[in-house]
Length: 468
Image 1: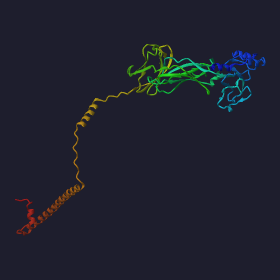
Image 2: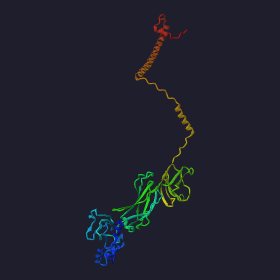
Image 3: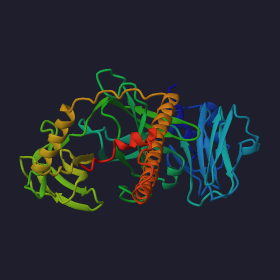
Image 4: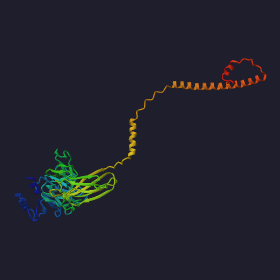
């Protein structure tokens, strides 16, 4: 028997004023034994079918629910007051199952602050009861086939695109509109690389691109309405990816694999012309790949960060078939940064919002020309330095002993010559004085006329002038 048929038995309950035979007839499982036993039952059963075959209300049944005899495994969730103790399950025979006593083989139990998630293999058929501070209006939800239903992703997607998508959950094909169920499961979409060597994402790791929320925040329109909203920010490398829709709970995981899709690189093209708007402006050009984007629908919202820290916001909303242009004031030198958000439509008519990567360009400060005279002089100096021959190598100096010898010789000669000169002057003056005295004596006494001159007198007489 297929799992769907087995699970269908989980929600079959006895209706008010019906017998077990009538329940068996509704379940299309006639049985003589059941018919005989049902004849002994009272006309009004304490177990009532409310809701559908996948969701059984416990509000009016004293927290009771029924499990059919041919169910091999059942997973149930009980919602209770915040922070209260886990519920206690009572089997049809009166035996109890406590959260602290589960064996982990036939019974699996996960308790959170607000709910209990219990999975039982081969449960005892019959009426069960849950004892605990279960929320009024709560339901025992027998989980069979929980699925996430979301529209397929668009065929043209861009890296850096911001995308909104809604989804809803079903259990056995029926929508789950119970708001507290969102605390039990986590909804997400992952992108898994196909490892196609022809694309840039070959060998890339898995990327989680969105988690679905039903809290009324972000792009979710209304909280707790059963519609989950996912906000995609496709800041992942371009390439070929396979989307996987995943529903995760503490006890089970459901996955839905879609066909691989192509994620295109960012289609917005940015260029700049330095001084393109004159000496006081740079011209910014914004274009897009025409085979992917309807250029007539392209709108731009951006800002320019100047080198000095100033920021200028701008918008371009006029439709045109040509590239968009914007003038940037050129009052400074350095690095300019341009950040854009693009709005438009793809060639197949889908609206998109695109986060464009930051574009930067450098404006260098121009060098001032030097005066021609100074440049000529500098050039001449350079030529002189280049043309000037290298000086001859200096001769090696004499050693210390030779230098000392020549110093003593020269100084000694100077002293000797000076001493002789002084001696000659003194001798000459004395002889002159003596000669003058002798001449006076000869004139007075007329004596010594015959006296011969001495050798020194003869020598000095050569320096005397002849009076005649």
